[in-house]
Length: 116
Image 1 (cartoon, rainbow, N blue to C red):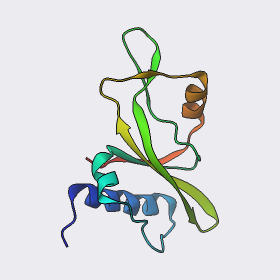
Image 2: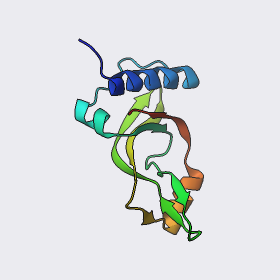
Image 3: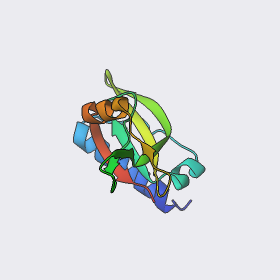
Image 4: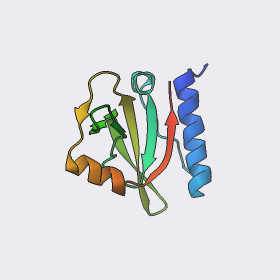
């Protein structure tokens, strides 16, 4: 079975996650091919709710640069991490709220890797 580019990048990212955290996955979580193909990035975090990236546009206001598509919990060796799949907003930017800004400032991203 040949891996797609998104699958290969997902497995590479999870291998990098293991190297960064020095924690070994018993089994790499499986996700649907559609989710992997449709997502732009994979972000593994310590925070439950991934705070998507923010961007500054011409009007000097912060906007959401990404949209969270799917998130799942990953428990390894008494530690909890979250695997988040996001897409980049290309045209439809939503104004970031104070809550979005606070989440963004407090998030702990272990790894963020492009899938497509």
